[in-house]
Length: 388
Ligand code: EPS
Image (cartoon, rainbow, N blue to C red; front, side, top):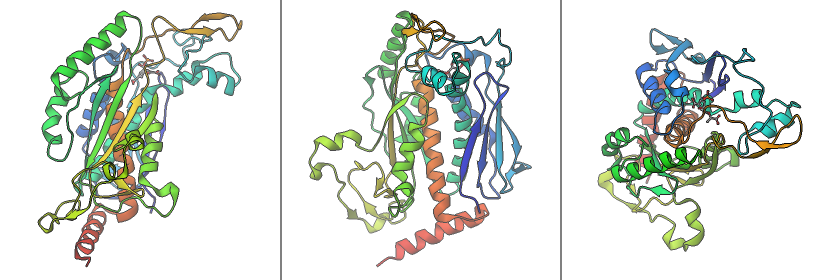
């Protein structure tokens, strides 16, 4: 039985983006509407460029699903690019003035070319549409065992919301987040972030921010401390750092652990017999500084991942660069781009994080069918609750 995994393929202006998802058990009802809503959210947010007016990202399922239900074979998800023109060398001309901060220069040198085009086509964050589709698919499986993910924008250009996201607040924040043009569940912060993006546009500049993903309902014991590469926190960091433009990943308190004493970092352990039905199995922690993982395993507390996205590398005003053909100084190239894609990034992080949680859930509960997966989940909880 394959472990849950996926591969993406496709270029920004190629015919389509693809994700091949392996290891989805048989018997999962595929809610395409949910996948498409996540794709639509990824396209949105204030500060996006002209490309999103061209595309209407919609998933087509090419394999692994029969009459709306998974068969256990690899599931191929396809998102067609309307703006497909990569073979037209006039419409996608060579680029020899690399953008600082993009993959352009390193890629041109790596593949021995003075044209950055091929590198940028593949390195483009357009590929994240395929990752969102795979992540959204994995969330359908997570729902079978009561696990849900929630993403939001924490700050843009230093303008931050201090809204608390936890088990009791997150459902109530969905509507506020979805009403926000910056995917930030606080109206005043949204307005200030919007103003900052508009100012960046006026300045012909770009702007980054902080995004968060929270996962609720995960039972204790997903992931493992037995090998470093099995640790869930390590895998979350790997997956999130693999998203375009991410420069830091934090779990829970993150880098703040460095400046506090242990007594103000570690989450005390208490037990409440009345709460054994919850994902913590009754082990109540008054704080969640650990962000839901200890020793690379889930604790039963919400999983909290925070990531910093750098500003988009394509500046309308350009940046000091060098023409690779002449080696003479020049401004970096400009092609249509976003001023800010932090809201979109929050959707990508939410779905990528969910996929990693689904992967460790599949490792623990296995099963060729969803029925077996759910039964194994219940059996584990039953045994854990009986521990004496
Ligand atoms: C993106 C589409 C791209 C860019 C963006 C991500 O479209 P185009 O290049 O045709 O305008 O807007 O890519 C980047 C920001 C980047 O640096 O590569 C998308 O759909 O998310």
